[in-house]
Length: 71
Image (cartoon, rainbow, N blue to C red):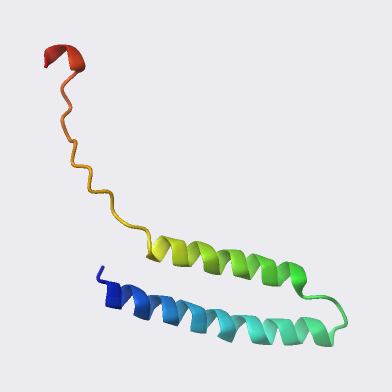
């Protein structure tokens, strides 16, 4: 995935995070309880999603399946 695509997907994920989080937080606050726990869960999901988007592929092409003794 190119860097531009990663940036656009990251911006989309952050935007979606705010679209989901704001109504949930407002609904929980209006009921009189604290939205801290659900916000922490959503924040961890956001961080995990961004890490998965920006995870780089390993360039180690060591596909040699021969045992050490046969080399």
